[in-house]
Amino acid sequence: MIVLGIESTAHTFGIAVLRDREVLANITDSFTTAHGGMIPAKVAMHHEEAYLPTLRKALNQAGIALRDVELIAYSDAPGIGHTLRIGAAAAKSLALELGVPLVGVNHCIAHLEVTALTTEAKDPVLLYCSGANTQIIAYDEGKYRIFGETLDVGIGNLLDTFARDLDLGFPGGPKVEKLALLATDEEMRNLISLPYSVKGMDVAFAGLQTNLLHKIKTKEFRTEHLCYSVQEHVFAMLVEVAERALAHVGKKELVLGGGVGCNKRLQEMCSIMCEARGAKFYCPPNQFLVDNAAMIAWTGKIMHERGNIQTTVENATIKPYERTDDVEVTWK
Image (cartoon, rainbow, N blue to C red):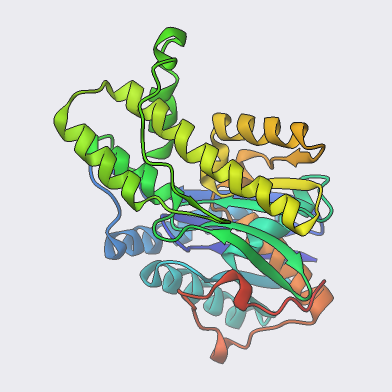
């Protein structure tokens, strides 16, 4: 089966083409700024303009014609309403034009499902670290359950806000990682003390965010030191709750998902923790960690084939606030 997937939950607009288990194309076009962050209306305009060029690139790279597509999958939740509507409109118009089935996909679940395509993980705990989402997810009794999450802002939004306060532009996570690497070994030993908020299985970043803004304004610390210290604190928090989740659910596999998962230091800390407790750590390639349409296409495919799930064009809505554990998983 040839599936065309569309991703538009946040700053990335993507279109992918999948044939069975082979990713023929996975094209993305992301909204960026030199200063500041995202304005939803502007991001939606970016996605609207990116749609046709991205579609052409995906079809050309896949070496297929549009008429060859047999299923359309699109991200319907959760995300920014302005941007979700662009992807949904594109998906509905294509499904109508081609006369093929349509499937709406939960973006968070797609991050976990794609690990079956890109890694050897069988029944993992997902440490999901993206812009607005920070969750520890695992499958149990018919749903993907959330065993821990952020109580306020997502890890990616924290890093982006921190970068914006430093006037580094958007997205900020990769820039923070690069600056953190500039600290020397000797300087690294002088870790700046920051709030560390772990509450049972959950984490909180808002207090840390306020503390960082104060430190930036006082100009007492070098930017490289702050970036290094932020990563060490927040990643330790995430790995702590991920390890607690592994113990709680009795699973032996951990996978990373979400754009923040591209960070090499976070990957290293996850690997160290898993090795210490006799668990296996898996990390998909970067193109499947960041927001991408291949994971939407893959999840839509298995939902349709295994769960007999189809969304009518009339009922193809968006659900900006749908939680991971709101979805009944009928395809497993």
